[in-house]
Every structure is written in C-alpha cells, then in structure tokens.
Image (cartoon, rainbow, N blue to C red; front, side, top):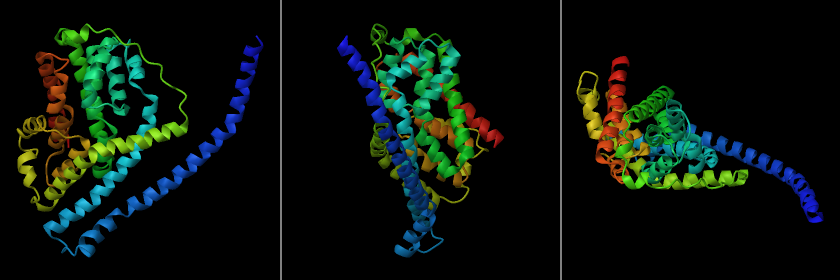
Length: 362
C-alpha cells in the first residue's frame, strides 16, 4: 500500500516539473520556426531575380532566345518547387504523426458506406501512403472490415490528391487550378469508390487475402513530444525529397524544353478544346507512364502555357498519377484481373468526365 501511495504521489510531482520545460521548448520551437519562415520567404520572393541573373548575367545567354527562355524557366522552377515542397512536406509530416495505419483503419471501419467513402478520400490527402504500400494497406483494410468501395476511395485519393500535387499546382499555376484539381480529384475518389462498392465485387479479391485474419491494431504512442513530431517532419522532408527530386528535376527540364522551344499555340492543335479526341488520348497516354506529382506538374505548367486545354491537361495528369501501370501490377497481387479492369474503367470514366467538363466550362 505504501509503495502504491508513493508511486501515485510521484507522478504529479514529475508532471509539474515537466511543465516549465515543455513551455520553454514550445517558445523555442515557435521563435525558431518564425525565423525560418521569414528567411524562407525572403529567398522565395527573390527567385525571379536570381534565375534571371544566372541565365543572362552569369551564363551570358542572349535574352529573348529559346535557350534563354528555357534556362530561365529551369533556374526559377527548380528552387521554387523545392522550397515549396520542403515547407509543405515538413508541415504535413508533423500532421502525419497523428495518423498511423492502425488509427486509419479504426477510423474507416464501421462507417456507413458513403460516409466512409468521403472520410477515406479526405484521409488519403494527409496519410503517407502511395502505390508502393498499396498491397499491405489493401490487406489491412479488408481484414479489418473496411468495405471494398471505401478502401478504393482511400487508394485513389492517397496518390492522386496529396500535398505534393496540391502545393505544386498552387505554386506554379495558382490557387484556382489547385482548388479545381483537389475538388475534382476528391470527387473521383469518392464517387469511384462508391460505384465500385455498389458493384459487389468482393468475390474478385484473391482468396488468400479474404482468408487472412485481421491483425489487431498496435498500441501507438500518442504522447509524442513536439521534439519528436518536428523530427518526424524533418525525416519526412529527407525521405520524400530523396525519392522525388530526380523526377522533379527531369519534369522541370522537360517543361523548360516545352516552354522554350515549342511554338505558341502548337499544343492547342493536339490538346486543345477543339480536338474532341484529345481527352481520351491524354488518358490513354497517361496510364502507361510512371511518374508522380513532382515530375508531372512542371510538364502540366508548360503544356498549359503553350495552349493546351485545362481539362485535357488535368485528365492527363490524373491518369498518370491515379492509374499508373506499376500500381496496377502491384495491386494484381491482391485483386483478380476483372476487378482491376473494373477499377481502371470506373476511375478512367471519372477522369474523362472531368476533362470534358472543364474543357466545356473554362
């Protein structure tokens, strides 16, 4: 009894001693963060002058030339996109410390179907999952009792409407196009998942998946300190940038080439509003390609600048990200061919609708 009493008395004392340290750490992180944002903003707002200096003063490239235009585009977009990604990935990395796979499964299981589709699509935006983790996620969701349609809403939204795509579109093309992309991407994820759920295709999941028993959710540490969460954000920046930087540089290089050398209006003849076949062609071209948002958004920026229609370009981008061939190969491990074909057909139909709708309205 004395031991129990002593232990209960120690806890409040330890907690009271920890409070000043937590407050001190909070102010230290806050001041450091504000200083870092101020330095970030100072550099970011001066990037146009830096890119112009590198192109025309340092490299002595003549102005109003194809090469000069392409290099200025490249020198401006690479640091701009990198800085945007660092800021957003760091912030989202901290947010992601509140979302583990176990907690995500718990949130999605037991929800009514359409409400589950909406919640799954929203969770797909902030959770750290992509096509490489599709198989274990699919198994975990199905064995936890998450409906098939809800699972698909999550798997569509996670790569399609992630923070990288949204921040790049915002930084390169403005908030209106970023909002359009995010809204239509979420709509496709929600509606495609709902349609697939209503088709009752559970029998087309590979047998070994349905025979697995649900693994109980692990006990996660919900008492992470802010130091731990900040370290998680820094780790996310290191890991994600380490994976996407090469795609980013290649994508911007391709975009720079289009920006500098493709004649004005040329893309309008291929991907313009007047070509009714441009949207299905864009989707058909996008599916076999393998890229992520970091690699495809700079190309989208350049295509729009050369006269391509917004709806056609959005359809191309969505098909590359949401229906990539590598993801379909990975999903084949858990889905039978008919279910994969149905999944591709439903998502592609939603993308086609988006493409034609925005070509009609904008």
